[in-house]
Image 1 (cartoon, helix red, strand yellow):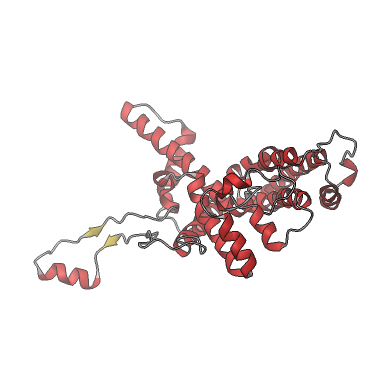
Image 2 (cartoon, one colour):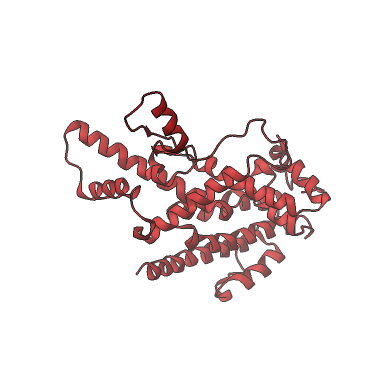
Length: 315
């Protein structure tokens, strides 16, 4: 069944997560090792005698560029509900590294800020808050490939492989299909697109900055036959044939047109990061709002790259 398949996938992702978590022992940070012992399913698997790093700058770079992204690819391959919890476990370790390097002074707000992209003031970018974007971007590229392959085959007179033909038929039928007929993966994908579309509509910019004078519309344009007052106005000028609206869905992740939209993961994730930042900003006190605004200022990412190469730094 679908539930059994998901549980099997979660178990396999969990196994990979445990292996990656054990690599944090190489950083040689006491608080990170303590968190590891609490987080591992089997603490006896943690090898305490591995070679360890002793330079803060190396420890931070290894965390941000080697250990942190280890399982990021799973966000593109698997449904968000399968991978999110495991990705969060790794992000807790990432944040603990920087907390240890800064003398264990990070409060809850700064811990949440740490996994933001560097352009928004983060130091160890996470993936769990934008797992929906990774999954949808992957689906977009896959559906675009199916559409392009089918088009080339039709134009050249070649016969489509049966597997691609069946997938193309399913994608074509989905627009007229009631949600009750969706597979569990299609339901998951649909929900992920709505998360992105809602974030795009509700959060047009960072709260720490001025909003754009003309916000971009992320609504679906109407389609179908013209009705109501518009139909009456057309009839009044002699139009006696039905008029159809061919609306263009301008939402960043239109579920029925993912192959056409073909958005980049970074662009889709940006909507979710802005929403994440704004929620964090609204809940923060004045001091943390100042730090959040400072971190999201253009060029701040270059400064954050230097952490913690100096003896005193403020995150």
